[in-house]
Length: 400
Image: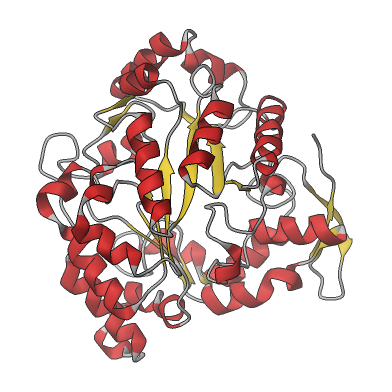
């Protein structure tokens, strides 16, 4: 369950993975003023869920009721930064934080901002939630000059490290979000991770940069600007070293040595390690990829991260191992990107006449599908027969 406060970010990071999507689909994304969520509607969703008032909610809202009722953690900051300069000006995040403080709801934040960690209005709220509010601070390099050129308008790495310290000093669990790891920029990760540890971070999460091969001229210009800083043509490098179509992720042979070394260093410092990359998910210390403390028990199971850890521990995994959470939290209609089975796209939407849980089970068992465990995670899980329910058994077959 994820939320953004604003429709766009005030920062101008050249690698921004939401730029391609939002610049084509969000009206006024490049020129207009950002829109914000309506705090009253967000509060109404949580209030209605608390008393299971489905009559007062639309179909989209009802999908979240079970998450909210079971206090599953909400990720705040997915496609925009909730503490950026728009927040400093408008304070919508602060308004909602006061509500989530009131209901004591578990939250995990992703941000590059630092100013709010020196603002008592925010920090007084966070100090009351060391038991269930978690912050990920994104930093891609300890080099301030490279960071300045690639993450335009973002506080320096040193300012963000200082933000980690301020949060850790009041007892907040803080994760260094070393994402995206960019070859030619992030190789100083040993320095960065050690600095984050010294500042008080207790975990690291990483993912290598992914490149949109369908880039238009605007996005290609961003890649060209990145290439000048990195010292190589990043567009060409990804086109030559990624098997995937569309969204280029680099091949496992390039990623694995980096991620394994990073994990060894992180563990040597007594920190937890997490991976959100499509490859090397077996390096995760928990089924969540964000660094949320596992002892909180608020992370969502019933996902591929959970399946890989189960297979790592016992050698194999079946759908029944992850089925309980999937059936509980994914029983809503699955209609892909088409919306509900009404209105314009009805004919196409009928192709998805199933629930999300049913679709996930079908995806598990269709070993030829690119998104199935058999093909999507770099050979970590290998089909090995079927169980008594007719579901595919996946054997753990780690490749370094």
